[in-house]
Length: 274
Image 1: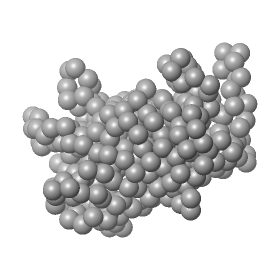
Image 2: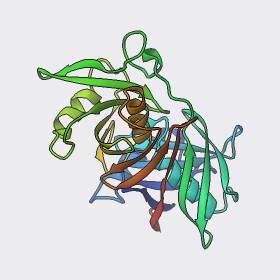
Image 3: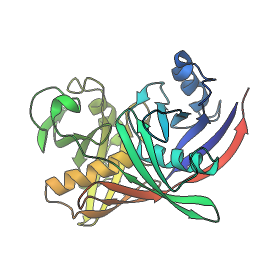
């Protein structure tokens, strides 16, 4: 079985063309866990499968390292777009991609026939608690959440998948590995949640660390970067166009009229596993 190893700002994936259904439905989760295990296998934050679509140019399915299926992924869909273009699955520079979160459009930036950057139309964010999903009614904007006697102000929304955004004073020393899993698995979130820890450096520059459900801390989270900017806009902390600095690099987020994310994407290597 052929695969590509890819990453967007260090958020890495094993990508496989599964349009012929060689990977059966019941095997997706186990395969993701097997292939993504670091040191003992290829190693990645997730497995991405290319599937046929009756609604779009192509369909993306994405599985986390723990085998759970994610609705969407900003870095993942950039990898997916590059893979489809360079493997001539969809040979055009504007793609419509079916995801569990709905249809997403991507625009490709190329150099010497290779995709170097991808811009993603992230769609319309969701704020209603029951649609994120989150227990309760209404919206969660700057609400209090207590973890181990410490009070945090959280803003929750879905940008294709659910995010809890916390603004902190110093991201470098914040205990992400302690607070992240406790919020991810908090009873408030029936499907768990991605947790974004954000420091405002300037109105147009954020620094962020991401704790992703099913993965732990990752080097980048594209949907999370969008969620951070949207939350910052709601709370008056940021401008509409913001550069988000993550452990793996920078993403450009534009929330002027619609949420757009642009960032680099790279192929690391390709191979065959048996």
